[in-house]
Amino acid sequence: MNENIIEVKNVAKKFGDFIAVNSISFNIKKGEILGFLGPNGAGKTTTIKMIMGLLRITSGSIKIDGMDLMTSRGKIKEKLGYMSQKFSLYPKLNAMENIEFFAGISGLGKKIISEKLKILKDLVDPSFLKRSVENLPPGIKQKVALFASLIPDPDILLLDEPTSGVDPEVRRDFWQEIYNLKKSGKTILVTTHNLDEVEYADRIVILHRGNIIVEGEPSELVREYEVDSVETLFKEAVRDNERN
Image (tube, rainbow, N blue to C red; front, side, top):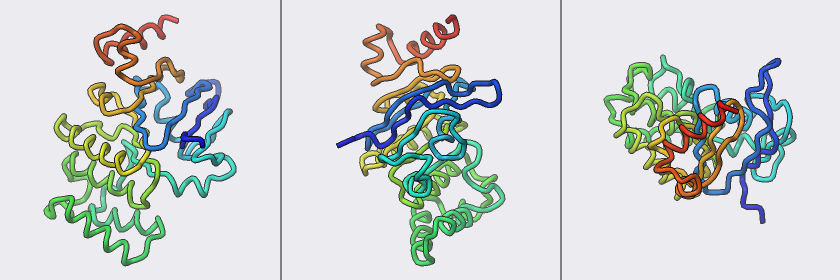
């Protein structure tokens, strides 16, 4: 039985002559947290958008739970939840209105939407629920955005820089929630540039200039490369790749 729920094989993405993602291959196992690391422009967001079906693949293939993305996009979409750094919620709507909207377009009935809103009221201080999203503190906005991505109860969560712009305490709380989701059986792909978050991931992939330059379990990679931390590994790997 294939335990890989995501299989990316020789996937490339070109924009004209520019190669954003350069024939990369990796797998994600069911129930795993994979951390996607890399400097800005490394190809992290482009890869997530291809997995989501938001960007067309230039070459290669992606399979989700054994289904080919090119031929089973509708069925695959039901399995995916997506939280974008730049756009996850409508800023002019309040938290409740956002959840009602996303639940509605997910095809949920009024009764289930009502239940979702009750759960949100337990998660977020009621004083924030009527504020427009653009006026919410970053940590509350993040919590609502994650809640919205979980509305259809997806098997797989794709989180693109979800902790960008929030303080370390909020980031720790967020990662605890991610870990709880993993324990409940979710598979999670998360991009981040905060290297202190790597300890939460089962495996990491480091991208640079559209290429995978390092992949593996954080503790094993630290031993293999004989460095004192993933941060040192990251800096040295990027530096060495820039020289080549």
